[in-house]
Image (cartoon, rainbow, N blue to C red; front, side, top):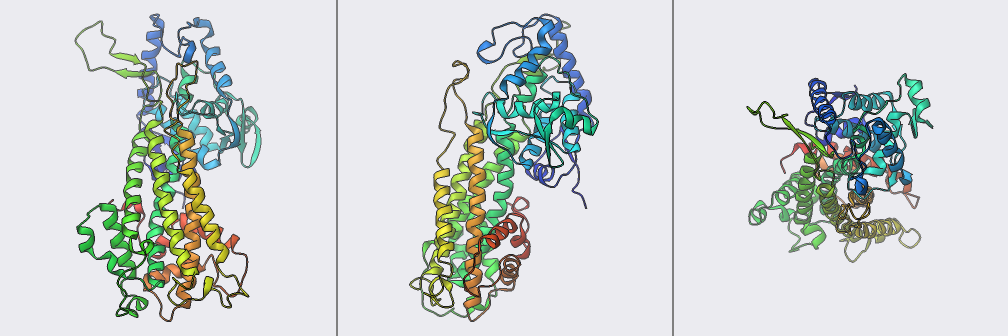
Length: 521
């Protein structure tokens, strides 16, 4: 069954971005948006007719904002803006990112403060529905005044320029439009600026990354629970009295989940009287470390959802409170800074750091299974014949490499700024860089967790008793993508498949748990 359609121009959330970007849900315009857009467009045109000077509408841009443009050249001004700003470089964004980008740009325009015609968001949604995916290079935006370069590449498709993908074929935009029965748009005053002035690249990349990160957070608790049980660790670390004394909601949630998953485990009961007092930090401190990451992701998700539903254009056409003055036009065209992506850049960097802690603690847990000194009776590297076989030796090395890369990627981008536009834009966010780094950390973490899952599943196979019913269901879900160890073999393809399954929520579903976004934080 196809996913339910998503309505833009009214509040949207992270799950809806995911549905349009990846599940190809249809995005449609809010039924009230057309009238609201026509109203604010009429106000803007009336202001122009009265001779007002409005930035980006009848002036140049950035450092050229004091240059007045004559009326007969306003359409050319908008075309020139898109052409001159489409200077992105490097690899193109993946299709899901561009689909999210098209949806979010249509959404922010449809909120009604940009002063564009209804035709503009309608056309973006028509391109999306037709399967046209503009070719948008990843590099070239500093995150203010908006994600200008990548959004300009996106916007070129609207006027029939640039390159796009259509059903797997790369072609000029005008040819793709013709194939789906659409005409290029002749931009009206301000519409080129409104297509590119905003934070949607930073927000689209971050939104998709956080959607995946929520799955990985749940997976960290689930896989960590298997590791704790397979390591013959103590579930007393989840005693609610401990966490009542340090009542961070995320910490308490992780402790509850781990205890719930291990409950009634024969393997856990088998060493109830072993006399061990406490485990290594990577096991004992899971609720505290995972819980801190949970709290961080909640903060980031909240920030991104605010940004999803924000006016990010400049200038904005904003209505006033009703007045008795017959001369009061009832609106203002105001220049501000809502295009600055610092509101997402800093949270994205925070998320990268939080997820890196999950990668580093996961790598430490899986490493303990590889050494006889710490594995509590398991063979070296979990092999059948240590020495002849290397077992999971290099899997741990790969996890270490990924965790180390996450550390490097966690250096914040948002603390940097380089002035642009002849100093007019003298403080920028570097939001797209923060977002892309976050996406890389998410991908790395998925693979580290896949390696831990592989190692923990092998450790369960080597123990005399099984784990709990729910964790054995997770074990079976792991085995659907990564077979049992029967001797040395290349695990690369199986680990990649398992990482994908983790991101899709297959281990969470096997554990009988709801998605993180539907749980209280």
